[in-house]
Length: 216
Image (cartoon, rainbow, N blue to C red; front, side, top):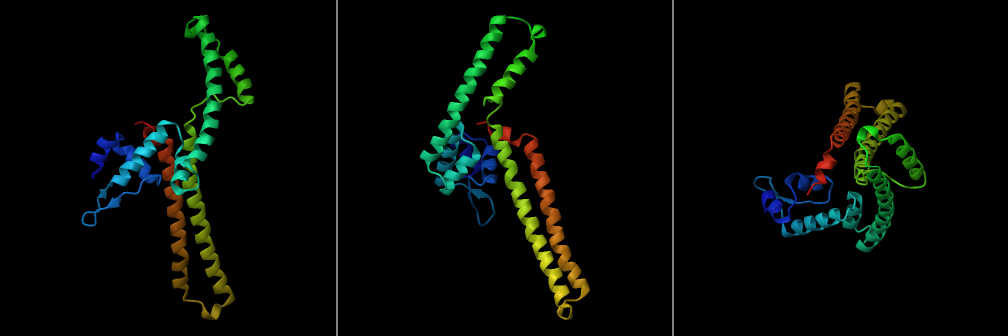
């Protein structure tokens, strides 16, 4: 199946489908002749599962854990129910504040926001959360590019350190200087490319890519 067919069948936009591919939740095959993605019935089933879990409010990382077998559906639901209960309590507190504002029946110009903000701070200190829960996905999305970048930098730095150590300990067997410079320059280029890619990815996240991907 083509992506347009999957979009119509599952009710998830092409942008969201590609987003889930980037997150590693969906891995469609490729046509050997033209390289285009080809979606199978299994991919459709996976997308339906993702859509269901996302509509229930599960974060990307939780779905990834279930797909990898690190968590069962029951385990994830237990954790999510705890989150939902906490959100229910937060929602009740928000509702109470909204009722009080409704009873005042005033205009925005007469609203003393500072009083309520101070009250909300006190509630937050006791564990309440007056913010968008799905920001959790955005925070998690920073983790992957940063970790990959860090691992690649450490790997390349280790490779360079090993080369320098070899040249110093066995100078008689060391390759020509020009070759050594090239060999040291290659990992430096990789480090630069990985860091650049990380900043590019972080920039995409900041532009609101995750907010777009939440829309079904």
